[in-house]
Image 1 (tube, protein in one colour):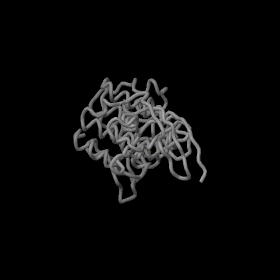
Image 2 (tube, protein in one colour; image 1 turned 180 degrees about the horizontal axis):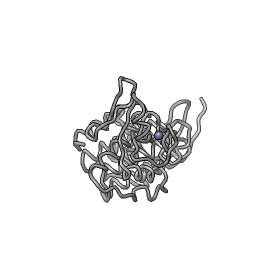
Image 3 (tube, protein in one colour; image 1 turned 90 degrees about the vertical axis):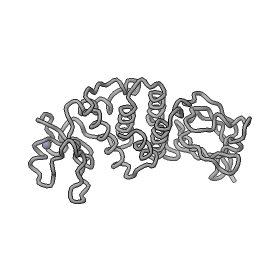
Image 4 (tube, rainbow, N blue to C red; image 1 turned 180 degrees about the vertical axis):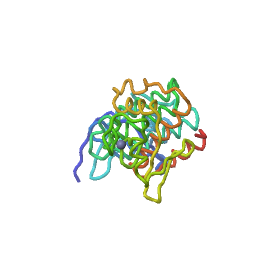
Length: 271
Ligand SMILES: [Zn+2]
């Protein structure tokens, strides 16, 4: 059976116990993308793999491949985001970020911007300098944008108008729709602010009203340099809530699945 070894930096996006002593890791690597590897002995005290082979570690990994299987030969921590485990709500949020990365990455496909985005997001969550809900929303929108679901936010996806009294996010069409197009299409029900999501007659039309402030924040997040991703202002709590729900609804509907980590996070954060 063909064997080969590689050395790569990687982010541990999942670490599950296997047997009595081992861990099964999912790594996100710059070049190789997503790799599943066995870390033998990583659950044993004093094993050299114990601290690098756990969730939320950015490290260097020596991997041995044999056929379809891979093992960690050696590993060292570059940065450990242990602060993510300081409360359960934060831990589930970090796990959700990892789950989305797992879903959006591919085996053998370079991770591209997804990897620095995940690292920046973990860092921002550890520092607690930013509102968690906004860090989450910025991650969701940017992750969607770089994974083939870039929303059209510059003009109405139906009439191409750039100026309008109001805009809505049409989640399934992947962009904004102006208020005139909404008013003139009988299949659209105008959502009240209290009820942001409208599922019209099972057609999965999801129309979210967005203010100018929310639209500006969304435009910023899909275009900003990664290092300045969180340097946007969103003033009112209502706008923050709309931005959060728009980003989450957008990515979940394009990935076409939910996540238990996300449900648990919502249960704890109550938003
Ligand atoms: Zn329009």
